[in-house]
Image 1: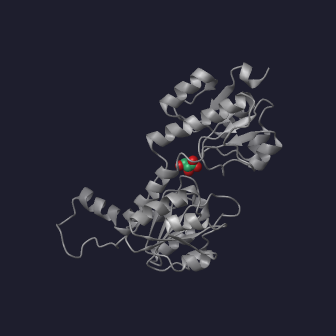
Image 2: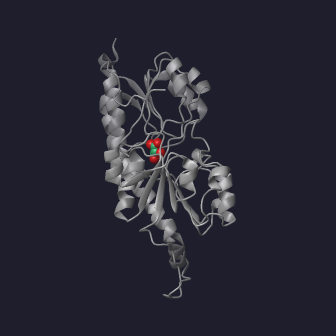
Image 3: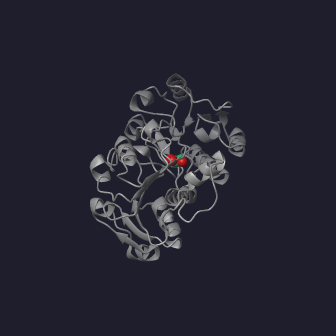
Length: 327
Ligand code: DGY
């Protein structure tokens, strides 16, 4: 029986927006996670054994040991999210399992959040919020809460993919000067549109920027791309923003430098060890920490669900899912 002739058994590891879950119920024989608990490895393995399609999210680690436990029927991992660094793509391919993701629909929301962090750190928003929440504000003063002017600052974007470019568009509107480092240089017309300067050398760019925004995917090649050595190249007045993956920055080295005042501030939405941010980052006045909420809009999360459904349905009809990830 071809997958299109039967209702596919689809296991979803986390709670999704209601409208997405309802549509999935109509289309598939779906197993949902009503209480949104985080499945442990045993439960994940059981889902892998008994489903045609698994819909995981970034908190489900699908390493090669785990994928070895997949049953013959598992043919597609339709990831709910753009990043697939929690899935061993090679092991999936070796086990005959396709992997798809949800690119494109979280670009603008993530870029908004990166811009929000640039402003929050540079203009000391969290210190202002804290003063008001604690009732410690004693009234306006010429020298209180002085941050830096956003306009005119040099923004260095590490990784000029969709999100990097969306950040560049926003930052240009704020009067920032755009610089970027990317494996491949953008086309001249895109560079001109973004008014962006390309740096072949990441080290040289890092040493000259006021704000750095990290926007590369995590892979073995980008693990600790911002190593202790590279972080030391930053100017003491520089601010570091990360809305991509925590593993790209050596978090211990960054924490040490922030505490020692060797860099001016950081805005982080992601951490090297998942949801466990280095505790020594907490309560630093020059650091804004967010709980990986860059793509957290109702609209974005629904569009991610729609992409997942399109990928599963395309597969069910015997075609290649449009967002297939090639290992
Ligand atoms: C993703 O989809 O990989 C994002 O990091 C979620 O915000």
